[in-house]
Amino acid sequence: MIAYTGLFLSALIAATILPMQSEAVLVGLLLGGGHPALPLLIVATVGNVLGSVINWYLGRYLLRFQDRAWFPSSKARLARAQGWYRRYGRWSLLGSWLPIVGDPLTVAAGLMREPLGPFLVLVTIAKGTRYLVLAALTLAWI
Image (cartoon, rainbow, N blue to C red):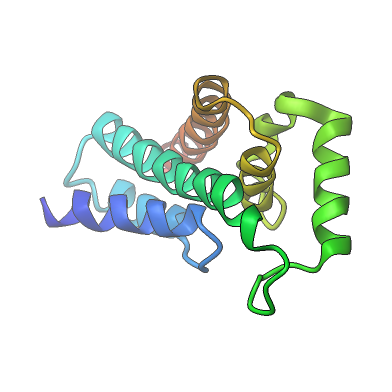
């Protein structure tokens, strides 16, 4: 149970703006061989999607504080992110698995008031596919 909890937490944290490597945790557990791959994939995906939902909520509700000094983004960066999301739309969430740009995409979706249902579907596809490919590559090496 500790392995699953650790994987869940690392995946959840990795999907927020905090640095974490859930992929390394997943690969380590897969290589350890003590846990079936499918439950590991489900736990990692659920944790990572929930972390993205945190980002979505942050984008959705923190925008009202954009004029405060502590707000984490300048107006120019915020406008650029909103413009990018307007240009590419909800389908850009399929790129939420990407390093560096994936997590800000989920925040931008919240800023742009993307409905939670389509958000969850697209982010789950993206994050789940990433973990599935990683697991397949890892297990193919064994």
